[in-house]
Length: 135
Image (cartoon, rainbow, N blue to C red; front, side, top):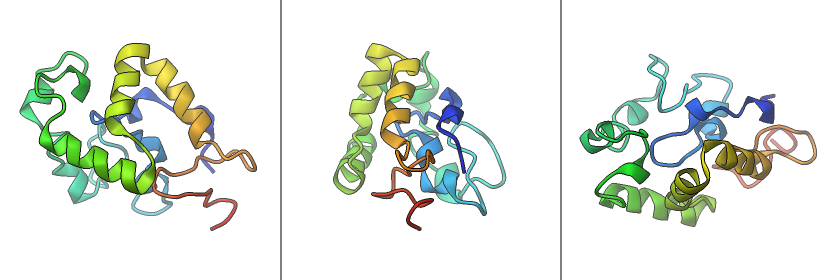
């Protein structure tokens, strides 16, 4: 079980996803290390992510899309729409919270939202319920 105390800013993806609550990060086998960490275990689709590999993102001071001159670009708008629709998570909204209130505040909000009240495990962005309590 991953503890909510383990929420870390290194697991914040440039697009506003908290990788520490991603099902790829939380799975026991072939675990993805998160967008900002280079590893052989990172899934191919993450390694080739157009947002994480964006040349404009590389020019930002913060390393987040909120600092980009093209915010929101077409790719971020598509990803944001998919995550809002399927997973009730607004990536552009997340980015604005990070920009306006800071990483610590965002991580506290995310910790509160993603911690199971029954067992204390992290609830994945990609699931409606805690997989530790009801697999």
